[in-house]
Length: 222
Image (cartoon, rainbow, N blue to C red):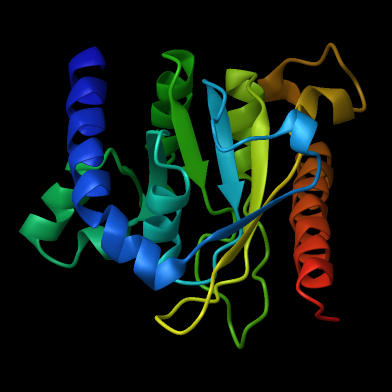
């Protein structure tokens, strides 16, 4: 695990260094904080980096916007199926493969292991891109991983405003400790009901929607 993490961090650092200026020109990221005293672009370790999903370019945006963070993103199997070289590239970046339709939950244990070793795991809870511009339902994996690893979640929203003539806006929310929202504090994680996990999942989606509203207010949108 340590050798894998070290290589991923070195390779990720190389990608960030070589892509920083082109990415800066493409995204021109503007960062907003809901509470500047509780937030920064220096992510705590370990933590879950949770974001809405606007585009395949979200990942590239966050490489530029959080230059000092080594984030290991959950990545769908469709990306790994784009060829052996690209699959290897994602592996070198530290990607954690998720086979969405295979009912294989190895990625949960892999994520927990990464967090247990002090890393940052990035999750797009929607699991896919928006349909007709609407946010997709959140999958419960974020809740399960956060509770199993007992780590904070850093909620982040991007408006997906990408392009040479555009500017991407990122809003960082306050850390979320899901244990604070549990109805029963002493229940083991594997005994938590589906209803409770669903309720916590709705809380996470509401947090992202709050960041969306905050971002739109900052940018004069309704």
